[in-house]
Length: 215
Image (cartoon, rainbow, N blue to C red; front, side):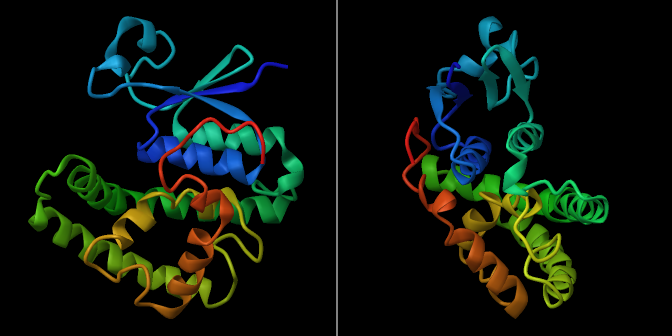
């Protein structure tokens, strides 16, 4: 069977999110590097498979899929033994609840802060500090609720790791690399966050995503 192809940029945040899940599940993949600076993601050839001109997308033996969370769900569903998407009715409902929490309560502010820090880290651009301060304040209040949830269980969806937790990378670590302790100032959030960033699947691509055929 053909190896899965991941079309993205090695330093791009969403490419790394998918690669982290692939590593978690020990799925071999080939990174097809897309040169964002050259605008390769906006070419007609690329946009035949990703009509929004964004990264990443995958080609799994001819099956094309884009949108990071959809890709991760597909991979987890293909390898259900991992439990990253629980199949038992109530466990799945709790997973979906946790996934919704990430998408609606974490991502809106975290993504804006992460983008500013990403531009600073890789392109030397000055971040919009006013925007960052406002979004970090919002995010800090959201993490109060996270701390309550995580005081009762190890992960957002229960006692086992799911995609809902992994969806928080790479934004959470990038935010933590800035001049803020937002990910570690609340004890239960800190314990959960430190668990995530210590995982081999996250640490594997600290220098950027690369083709991985053996684990």
